[in-house]
Image (cartoon, rainbow, N blue to C red; front, side, top):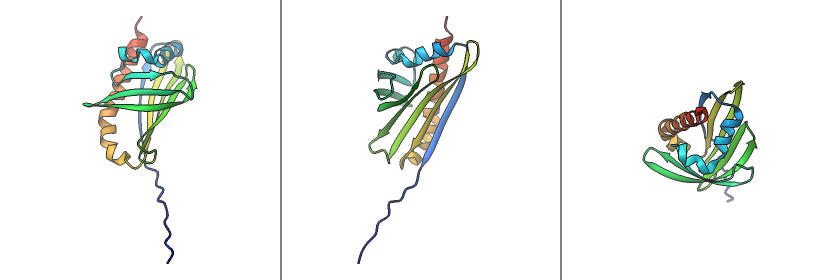
Length: 155
C-alpha cells in the first residue's frame, strides 16, 4: 500500500494597522524613525533597536507588550527614504509565526503627514495570538505613534 501525504497549506493572516497625523515634514519623521539608536529615548513599545535602517540589514528589536518583553530578529526588506521602512521576522519557523512591519509616511501638505503603522502576521500560531494582537499590540502601536508625533512636533 502506498500512502500519500498532502501538506495542508492554509494561509492564516491577521493585520494590525494604526495611523496618526503629524504636524511635521516627511524628512523630520523619517529622521526620527530611522535613527534606531535613539528609539529608547522616545519609543514606549519598541523600546530597544539595534541595527541599521538599510535594505538587507539585520535589526534586533525588543518589544514591550503587556508585561511581556520579546526580542525579534528582523531583516529590513524595504527602505524608501521619507516614505517607508519595512522589516520581516519570524518566530521559530516561518510557518508558525511571522510578521512584516511597515512604517509608512504619507505627505498631506506642507509640514503635515499621515503616519501608518502596519503589521501583517502569518502562520499557524496567529489564531492563538489574535487576542494579544488586538489588545496589547494595538495599544503598543498607538503609544508608539503618539510618541513619534510628540517627538516630531517638538520644536
